Length: 267
Image (cartoon, rainbow, N blue to C red):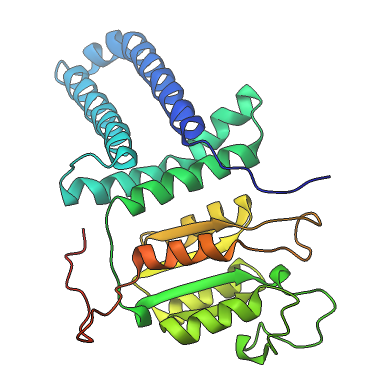
């Protein structure tokens, strides 16, 4: 079976999100009409207050979805709304997953689409962080299964034989100055986040681990790079080094010719 990664479609997650929103509108309308007589019997002010609360919540969600579309397209949006959009994306993730399950869409496809949407929103926030405030985490399955050197304790134990991509990543970490760790799972990844306290994260993993990882480290902005699985999941996986470098250069604050960091406002 070929496990090569196909480019995820952002429209799948957005489409499911819009369908979910329409269902929420219908359900809220039904609840309103059913409860209206009872609310009026209890207190004449209760029904308008309940309606105002529902309308307010639905308005914020609808505005957030619109903000996602702006964020994906890179259209102008105030900084505060960019942050709120990223928040809403993560809050509604599990609702969209549940909607996809009911419809019968594979969870992995939705997770890949979610990662693509999240990457687009982070990209269009134009974040720049110093190299020493960027954390890069990768799964241990990137290491060749027959390699005797333990790199989850220290990636510098890698002998850079070229048998897997770990040596390439260690070299890039040395050259660019970001923190790089190989982790065995989400618990260790969260531990490294607590230790380093990064301003941003770049993660290499499968759809499932990237989606859960983005949720785990929220509100820290995270760029996800999908791994390549020529031998199936979790075994001798690979990463496109050029794609990885593009993700790093997109978010890292590269010094200019005078050795000074580029001063860019974090949006």
